[in-house]
Image (tube, rainbow, N blue to C red; front, side, top):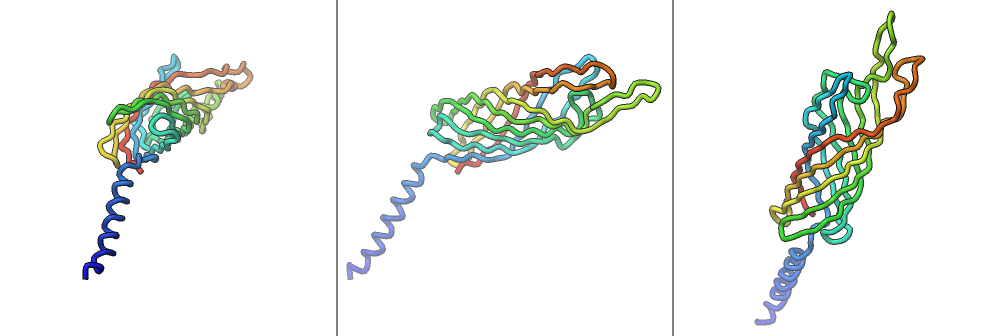
Length: 202
């Protein structure tokens, strides 16, 4: 009669061991929604103020909690009314790079460097002088680099919150803004950016 309980005992032991082993595994993938705010510097010819953008973030650890791939995508649901030669319309951003840092208990601190792009949906591409004064508007997409820091706090094995702050550099190519006039020289602009995310960890 006692032999009838052997398979049940073995099954229980196997299940318990598997559960304990799963609990010891550190989650490698972190994904979740993100809200971010980009502050575009004011210009002498005008400025554009953007509302917060929404998007998603994904990170994959490649060496414990120290090194990992890090990526994000975001867009502004509300478009500003203003346009300049450097910003205007819906802003779309995407970045993919690496993060490196340290962990202490529930607290994780990282530095990040992520190349990508910033795309503005409605900027001034060209100005036609008087008497036929007009603006040619369109999309402008430029390479960008997101560099800064990350603070992540794990709530549990499956959930965490994350806060980003950094400098988003946008690299504008030279362009002819006024026909027949010299090019507007290329430039790189520094743009302060904050972000907060809720992460699901797997």
